[in-house]
Image (cartoon, rainbow, N blue to C red; front, side, top):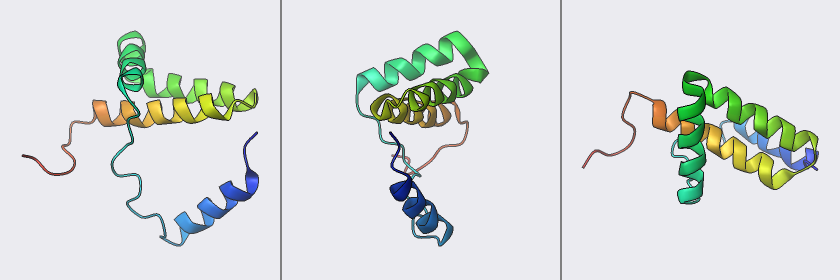
Length: 91
């Protein structure tokens, strides 16, 4: 179950600019996350992010917060992997 109090708190902080830049670099939990993202990109192409979002919604509707968070993370990883612009420091 999604914690509506926490969601409201994060939303308020984001609107006030309290979380500005917090999500610039996506968290990648491991090879499994990259494998899921790569699989969706291969199977769905440009629609991979939409598929990850759809899977997140299904997980949320079922009350599975862990899988919801996983698929939301995969959605952000897909965006990062498919961006043409370089982010962060180039070594």
